[in-house]
Length: 347
Image (cartoon, rainbow, N blue to C red; front, side, top):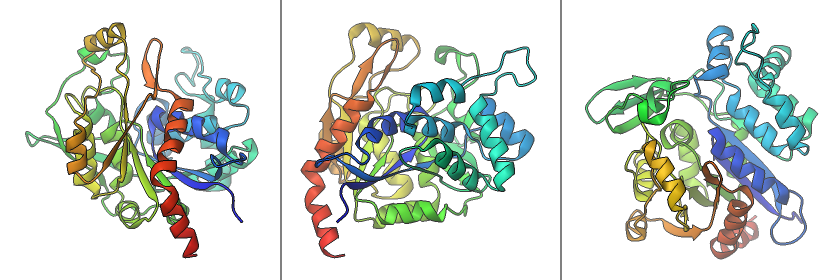
């Protein structure tokens, strides 16, 4: 009999790799907190930095978020992180590129497809999970703002201009909707298969409009989530993000997901510990603030709130990988075990 859970994580950016880093320690573990299969579905709409350059010059899918997931799931993460994230000197012809991105580009040419390149890299590095791009088509983000303005591309939407502080970035009106072009982009079949077999699906953490919703904008993926019998969990961000979620409370994040993809969440994880006053003040200078919440409004959206101490503080506030994984398993013990037994008894 299979031991452990089938878990699928959906997202992009640093949030997804942070989650995977905590979960991988439970892959193949003994006991109730064990993972039989861990899979990640990763957004491919990045247009900034090295990924953007490779996308424009070579027509390949952006490798950066996939690279981060490979590193997070690797056995020898520290060394691999140094190698894969190594960036060439500014005076070099390869300036700004990470070695991991270039390796994925080379493997794409050797294997003939980005999907096969990711699979080959994963096998060579013996990572503790599977990684699937959400689609193999060349997709771009398109955001419609509340004032009617349309922004094309991830960089324009997030305002992530290289070298600029958040406090000096050009601001735009609040985002109303986000979509992908082409709108009928097909998902990777292996990603759909992983969702169908999942006991637990985790959405986030990550940038709402440029890491989370690009995956849910792929219609068959959203449909698979709506129809899934797995426990579906959304991990809300800890801090607001300038240009994307200014003044958003937790229920605003959740409402955006519901409006774009329907009810694809059963339980929402929120940080239960406020960051220190010093770090809150430092973030406020950059127009970022702790994500507030109203549990009653989360309930009104048909979702159960779940609180955990899931942050780590240093120069930044981030989700803490071990604490987040611990919270996910405690949540599953409470809400997912009965559902799991029912699914397995039905075959």
